Length: 625
Ligand code: WT7
Image (cartoon, rainbow, N blue to C red; front, side, top):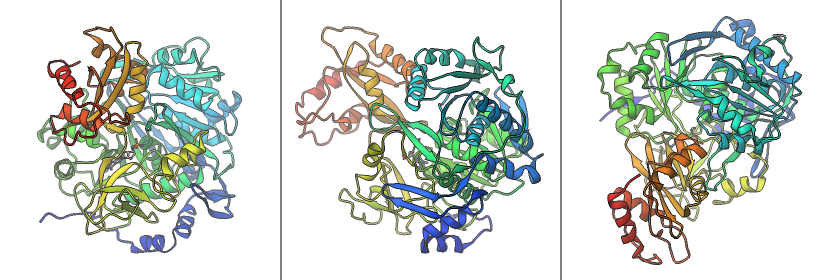
């Protein structure tokens, strides 16, 4: 019988007890750990499905991330930055504060006001975090667009958010090469009339004509009074894929989100003053917002920020970084671990990883064998592994072991328990609680501080997407089961959203991209198991009458990569004579998936025309592309 445990010596049962007793009062207490300019008059206004936390209170995220540390930690490193080429920078809390103040002053000089949207399209550099904090400082709403996205994805997000300012960089560095972000940004700017100013972190040369170079921004005064922002005012929009063709703008607020991220960062990572925390997530995704940009700074922690990929120049890169900076906490994805496992144990074993004391996983289910490798080979058997489940929409972790407050037996592959104050239930189709160990739908019964405010500009869609499938409950779209000990096991998405290398990609978005090609009449996209990336993308297309093109599969793969971004490039695109459909016209993705994986097609009696499967089998048989 194996025994894994969060054995860090913390066991404060009063936290969970207080939260279970009265979650509103509990979060009220948590919010008091942060600085508020004016206190709130109402802890929670719960007008389902709209939760507003700490109503009437005013605060500022940037103030809590920076100003509060200036007396005690101004010389403490906030960020050890490392570029892929090995160049390094250290940025202290004092330097970060001054950079953010200069930027905030400069943005105000450009006319940016509270509530205005600013799009950030930057690689993994400290200036990206500084830009987020500068927006927060003046009450502007940032919308970070992952630097791997294409010009049309960037333009769509700028237009949807109505951003007046774009902050970008000329280049990002990755896999030994440079990525021309300025060119992508310029293409996007051709169709974004709302953008009045473009600021550029010009790393490789002079700023493009008409753009404001970073150095101009840095000429502004290095002190700035943080605006008093209402707790319920928006902090950021982050676009994420849903089940429709267009990404949704998830809107997060200030005080609730800040409280959630602050508390969970401390609970999950047992953060202490001497820690060196290393999260490999890109700031362009929500993990990078909550647990790179905000959580560590709110807690006054030191972190490593790495611009590059984990296997460049070779598979020892992460272990070298851990050794060089003496990292104590590593937070990464199952995909990164699965990729590194295949290089064997010798590489990690030949590095000094003895400073590590806690390991985390995020973004997709972690296979038990990967969990054990992480625990034994990377953690040397000493470090608890926490599997943290949450979403862009939830703002912060909702399921995780919390070694900072609790001592708890761990089970590889289970996220363990909901965080204090959050009531979850796994239910069947009708919404009645599922029996133990039975697969059902994860639901959440009460609001938590990090819950999104709404979808940007679409309250109705917010209601329909998250609160209608099981009335009165939040439905994240995940399958789960609860075991006899009350532990939760996440069992993947229950909808048409794929998790490819932990990135979230909606099949509907891919399909609408594919049918935008003149040769394509219909398309269906499915996720297929992939031993490293969790899921791979396979597309089926029905071509328009008369189209014959042997290279169409390859052309469509590249089109998707160009239109959405390389993360969305399908592994294969198969032209087929027809798609399998039910009599009511619904595409039977289950059948398509089993055609690729070689599994049984199971019950096909609801099919409109069962000969379609033979046609597909013939089409995908010899061909790929
Ligand atoms: C979806 C949310 C968590 C922040 C980064 C991803 C899946 C996330 C886990 C986990 C199993 C997980 C879920 C969720 N997911 N973490 N620990 N175990 N599945 O945020 O891009 O909004 O994706 O990722 O399906 O709904 P996201």
